[in-house]
Image (tube, rainbow, N blue to C red; front, side, top):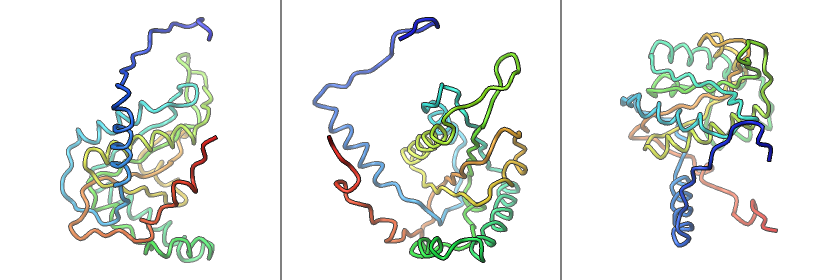
Length: 224
């Protein structure tokens, strides 16, 4: 490993061997209880919780440590209403003809349609943007690497932290999402990647049985 640039000793907190498997199992069990929610309460959520979740997400690993992301946390009800209005325009076009029959057939068990009231009801929308390029300290353009992979990992950190905090979440990706950059005033080098809806579930929230059917462990994992 090259030492041309400064390094420091790794800060690593070892876990006693007897605790490792129980800790892994407990964390896995917690994440397995996470569910996508489409019916949200308008109950208030402290900004500090959202800040903590974004703080976790910004520490995700990324290609060459360029951290090619920006998180726009939206709580303003006027802005949330505008996001919903613009998203529903795209969603209606999707359900009314842009989507293939195969795609619509895949969505049918989830019971979704073009209406997205959760974008207005939930107290927080976290719009995650992927930065295609950045800038070096001298202002010159800096290419970012492994952008989709890096931002995807950051979104995983974000979702896990929100769930751990006791919030319900939904990932929403209207297609296309260009309106989000315009609506939220983001620069040219950023492309909307995902909306993470966060809040408390509505008292009558339900989960499609289809969403609970997960492929068996032995079908998705191979040990060599």
